Length: 199
Image (cartoon, rainbow, N blue to C red; front, side, top):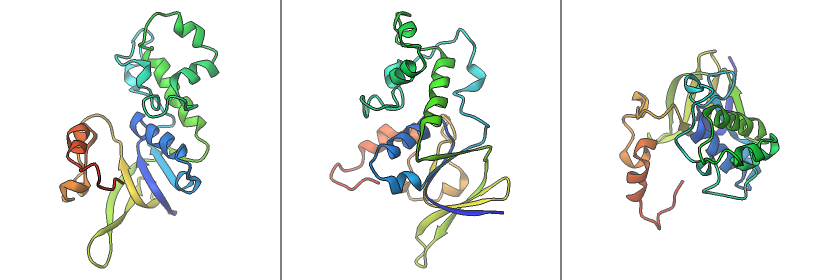
């Protein structure tokens, strides 16, 4: 059993956590990027792998990729992916803003492979998450036990387990101001004062 310490641990390498990884990598902090680890239970990144029929299209515009709304000049845009794959002309001539699902899935895998500092560990499944508490009882970090027996300790934990709103029991007791599920993000973030520090 190996024990590893990281600053940021993200469980799941889906679109949300990949977007976070890109934002961290583009943050300008090499220390933050080098101290970030994503865990993915599968051997690769596939977007909704059971829905990758050859004719199926995404219902979302390619402009809502992982980075364009945050940084349109990022090297991680969907358009740059198409350009690097030699598929930009073909896509533009399709006359649609909606890529094929398999194409968007390929984009996610390309982003994962293009990360230079943030690490992704494949075939890693979290089995247990426990808070690490300070002497005063406050949560100071997290301990994540993997199914292979390895333990990863982190300061900040991001759980990206999919679209369905499910809060694991270990987090159920956290104060409401410390936990926001992505399904509640817009409503909850609107309740945070704009002058309050965000982390």
